[in-house]
Structure formats: C-alpha cells, structure tokens
Amino acid sequence: MRFQNRTQAAKLLAERLLRREDIESGAEQTIVLALPRGGVPLGEVIADSLNCQLDIVLVRKLGLPQFSELAMGAIASNGIKVLNQVVVNAYRVSEADIAKVEAKQRELLLHREQLYRGSRPYPQLKGKTVIIVDDGIATGATVKAAIKAVRMQQPVKIVLAVPVAPLDTLAELQTEVDQLICLIEADDFQAVGQYYQQFNQVSDAEVSACLAKFWQ
Image 1 (tube, rainbow, N blue to C red):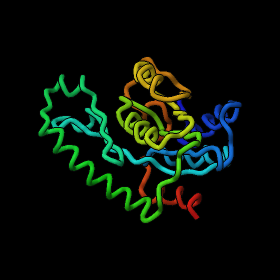
Image 2 (spheres, rainbow, N blue to C red; image 1 turned 135 degrees about the horizontal axis):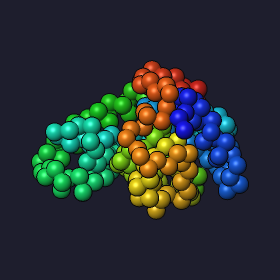
Image 3 (spheres, one colour; image 1 turned 90 degrees about the vertical axis):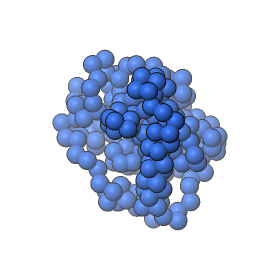
Image 4 (cartoon, rainbow, N blue to C red; image 1 turned 45 degrees about the vertical axis):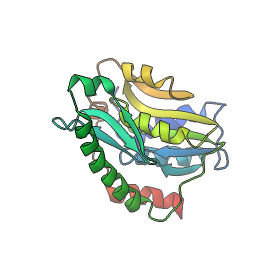
C-alpha cells in the first residue's frame, strides 16, 4: 500500500479516529498536535474532521556527528531530551559530542518556535485528549521526545496517529501512549517516503499557512 500524498493519508487517519467512540470531537475535549514540518498538513485535515484545535509540538532530531541522518536521539521544548543509548553506544558517541549536537539543535528549535509561534502562548493540555500526528515514523526518537513533552502537561489521554511506521518501532511506542493508530505497520521499512507516491518537502510557509487557519 502507498498513499497518494499526505492529504490522503490524513483523511484515512481521520476516518479511523472518527470511528472511535472513546475519542471525543470538539475543541473543548480534544486537540491535535502536529510535528512540523511534515506532520502539519496531516494535522490540519484531522483537526478539521474532528472539529478541534490544531497546534504544534516542536522537536529536533539529534543526528550522529558522522551520520547526521541517523538519529541518536531527539529534543523538545522545556529541556526535554531522549537518547537512543543503543545507537550512542554502538557509534561510541562521547558526552561532549552529544552536547555539541544538542546545542546546535536547541538553537534551531528556538528559531522554529519563534518562526511558527511568535508570541502565541502554548495550548493548555491538562485534562484534554491530545492526538499527536506525524507523516510517518522511522526510529521513533522525535516522537518519543514529543510524547514526553506532552505528558508533562497532564493530558487525560495521548493518542499517537501516523500513516506508517516500522513494526519494531511501534512495539516500543505502544507503551508510551494510551492509544496508537497506524495505517501501515511495516516489516520491510526503509524510509517514510517509500510509502507515498508524492512526498514533497513541506515548507515553513506551508506550515504557517496551515496554522493560521486555526490561530485566527
């Protein structure tokens, strides 16, 4: 199975969420938190379908110093950091190298926060059902950081909704959230993009435009 694009994937996820009686629609009960940039177009469709608020949870991958595409962890706002100790140990990454990568990504995280959010306050999550959305998961590092950041704000329930993820990553994430919805549980996973016919990079302008619809 391959999705035509992010919009089709989002509509299929929305249909699955709407069928669940334990997930209430409406802005008072539920909020969709998308991971920029790729998760935001999906979040827009899902929030529209559930008639609820859309916001973002900002995370940054911590790539290996020698192979930046391979995640050794991730960071989120409020000083949150999640490390994949298996990768760190396998590549013998020192604490100094981790700190150097983290400092650079914290700077980029702050820049993105200012770019997307400006002076807008963070949403109140306490007592709400929070649906975390991305366009796909590979190692799960960024999603784990997002979940940790959200959990600190005491939502009543955390739902993770994604179109595709590897089976082994899903097994790790199952215990991190209250509900997990994944359309394709891949046993031959290589990259998120292989499950989309169209997988264009989402621009900062597109992210801002999606959020503007809900933040007026």
